[in-house]
Image (cartoon, rainbow, N blue to C red; front, top):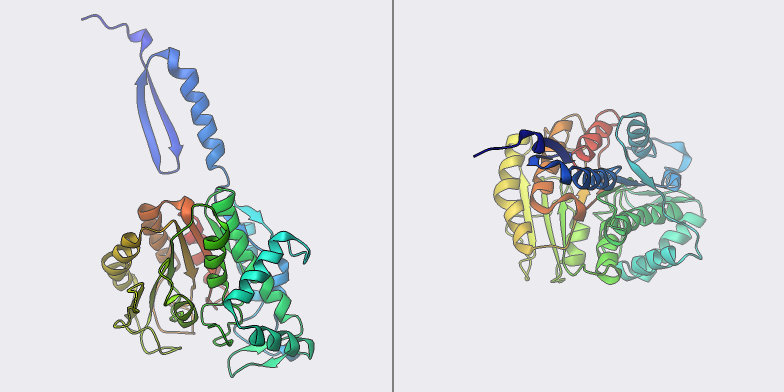
Length: 357
């Protein structure tokens, strides 16, 4: 057998950051493959999006007093990501009240929360704010600021699902996962995650099943209550046991079996989290076969966060993200900021998360 070696070429292509192919082919196909590779590279450029609006900084404690849920939570993450080397696609929701986008955001907020509760929030903000409860405050700008945060979550869904632009992180505050239909609590006023999920189900073509995973150290009682009877949504939470809001027992699976609660002991580190995610969370979410995965990304399980007692490190969130990308692919993942109150380590944990998408 005679082989003409001048007609054989070995070509290595990095088609994605994680997929490299070594191909042997005749030169006649080289230009076609190089063109395809260039198109792939363009498609993967700036794939990770961040939905953000400066308006989320307007929610401030009245009187300038200290509160752990402060604008610096978001500004520290924003500045860290902007100053880093990641190629991120920053998008800002249109907050114009006359826009169709904002009309839909407010429409879904009205579907998620009781009208009387929303009226109370607006009225109290107009009067200068105050305390909803021992933990949860309102300032003069809080209502529109929190709605802007919800719009960031919805914009993340729109970018990922409607525009097919890749995974997106909603950099918004305050957190929302504790807020049930009729009240605010635990720093939360409007349930951003619930609004984002309902928006996807109502307006995004091809989204019929939404899986929510909450890795905040506190159980997302508000999200759970809103979707307990929703067959097209499943909710899984890994959280510290016997911590606020003192819910999320492992025995509570919901009447539709669409809930999974995974409480972990104080002091739990990556070894504990990895075991629970691999053997409980992933099988549950995978069996649900979602069209969209929304992650309530709280970072208060970090060892240096004083809001609870777990012991994760920033890099552990990258390991968590690796598992989700492997299971579901990055193109159907949306994340939004929930808790995370240490201004030094939370930005590093967010960066570790986004670096794996």
